[in-house]
Image (cartoon, rainbow, N blue to C red; front, top):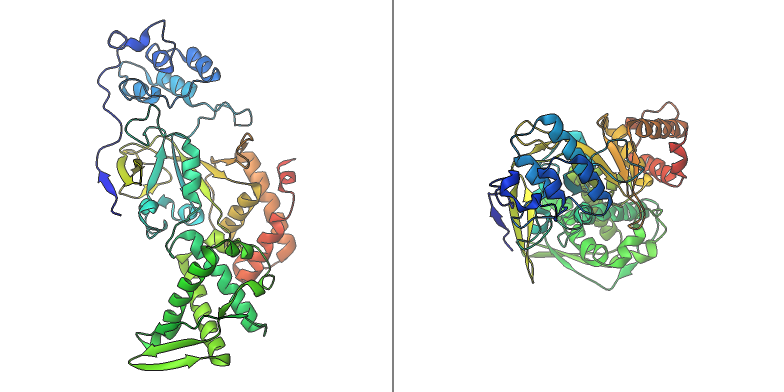
Length: 445
């Protein structure tokens, strides 16, 4: 389906916020909107503790943050105090005076984004179908999901978390590519160690456009085969993080393949077929390791490491609409790349990185060490494991302590060998060993 795009933000224009022009200043209406207009930070804090949320829209379709931003006759110190009262985290584990992000972006390409310093199409998979939204989508606390919503986007973080898994029906989605890599590793391991690849009853034909490019065409066929027969089915999950020969009996390849080119046919069996599989799997592995699969998922043996980036307010967002079976949903996006440091015209500095577990954060830190990527010094790490549990926050000092202990652990395993000199199998083993530890102990002094 073709996505619908509009160039205007999905927020009605605010026309007036003077106390005399707004019914929200009424004493009988103790709302966040009214407290903003009355410039009462204490009332804002009290109302939020009582359960009111800053994503509620008034009759005009404006959130309290929208109202605050449009107020002109206010000094910046007062504006900052009101903003903090609206956004300060109520989680006791959050750093002191920590304000929640106003926009989120979920992605399986987290290391590539950190490495590039920006959200841009080159590092966000642009081929995952319309729901990938070309990798430039923000789930914003300033925009609604549907035009008749009474709040800004509900379940704000869950939307970005879903997006960060990189799933889709196409062979090019990040989740599929991650598993394609692991399954190709399994195939090559079996062939290189002389272990049998159990056959299935299939006998497909492959039309070869250019015999000189057989490895590439074989890789494209293998990619489609693995996607349809394993990755879209529950059996594919068995191979994530498992030893390469643990589930060999569950990976069955055709016992014969017919290659057709220029009216000629050639049936492959036995050693010829194994040679074809080796060439195809090697080429598929090469292309995935050359940037077509998220590096963290490759390091994590086929398992996506979903990251959610939290940003300060982002200006000038436009709307992207997707028509579903029953309704139309709105997504906020920018056409241009968005620097993680923010920009004068659009704002949006990166301030928070959310991971599912400390295991995932360890993989992020290991990937950063391998690729020479530095995390922003003031970045807050948010660890959200179970839906029912409060998130755990790591400030800069605890993040630094965690990374120091990871570095010591890596040095213990590698000795004097720099990470850049190790092959992928060694790095995968280090990652697996680290994730098997009780990483919460790394946060205690």
